[in-house]
Length: 295
Image (cartoon, rainbow, N blue to C red; front, side, top):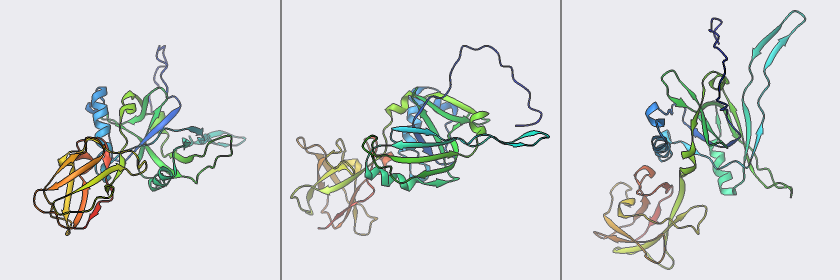
């Protein structure tokens, strides 16, 4: 804060709006911003966030699972205390440990999100407020991260459940203390987290040059089918991984997530995958590993 900062009045107000207990977070690249048009209304905010969730890796944001427990671990303000004077040296960092109780697959996935002095984080609270920081142009960003560190699993002791602890430390307290802003974030409850899916050959089916049958299912919950895909969602690559082969796809009326793929011209060996999340006709899935097709 500047030595010449003009003091603002501390008058009466009926507004008692402060951030509440965090219940989840959204991590973003360092340059991700919500422009004023992106949060002008609920529909615009939902579109901006969901679009970013489905964006390419470099621009993608991540909506984390709901927290099961929150530890407030913020550093105390630091002072030089001598017989002659008391001088503040730094404000201290905002620090948290968020616990997430889900499953081992998500525990492993969260370890890929470790970061040091990289990225930003929005906090979403129990009052459905989205907490971020505002720049001079009215853009809203998450808070700069000094550290996001997934910790080893906390095993259940019979009284509390096992959980995945995530230690989050904010880099600059002034992003809250001077520029913090709360948005109506009810739409966050409506967002779809990007979910990995896999494509497998269905049952006793086999590959054939004219057609074959596959199941598309969630990678973690393998008994949960992915229904509603259409022809445009599938891509069949030739062996060179570049040329594509035209096809039609039809979902089984009795088995959700089961698709018959029919060749326009005979299939050859190669791979089958789905389009990028931003191009899929349903929200919000990604197929990280293509199915190897052998004709």
